[in-house]
Image 1: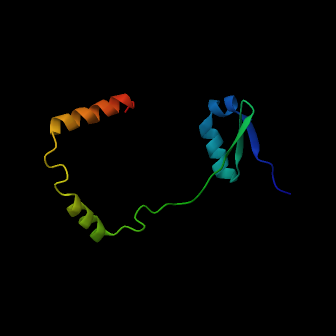
Image 2: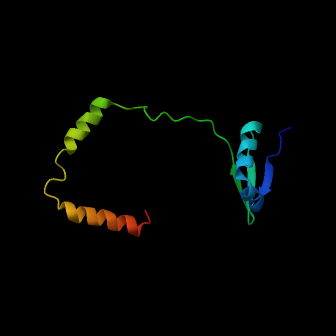
Length: 92
C-alpha cells in the first residue's frame, strides 16, 4: 500500500522550511501544504537540465555578427534613461 504524503499547514511549513525540504530529500516523498483550504504538493524532482544542450558556437557567432551595429544611431543617453525608468517602474 502506498504511503500517504506528509501533510502540514502553512504555518508549520513556514516555521522551518529547511527541515521540510531535508525530510523530502531523505524520504523521497512529497509533502502536502495546506494554505487556507488549498492544498499544494511539494515534490523533489531530480531532473538535471543541461544548459549546453543544443548549443552551437557557430550559430552563436553568426547571430552576434548579425546584430553588429544594431544600435547605431540610437541616442545612448535616452536609451539609458528609458532602461533606468523601466527598472524603477518594475521594481528592479
